Length: 82
Image (cartoon, rainbow, N blue to C red):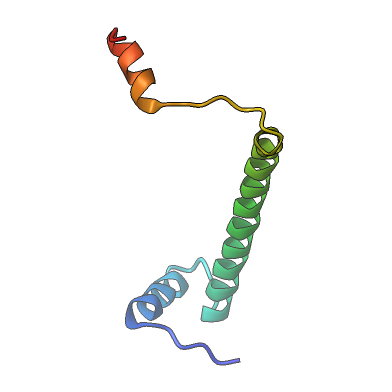
């Protein structure tokens, strides 16, 4: 596999290798991909938790079990207006 990097990314990889933290560019790229995969998995879990939390409300709304809401009315109540 051949990967093309922008000049900025190429310089970043070279800096990481020259710092001694990595033995070669492949190690830097592998670590970056592992971190990206972990981030993607974490984001997917967060999204699923949000979907799970919202689902009961969607079901209630589909059954017609909801109340009309007006942001303007709520703000007026906070301001002490009728």
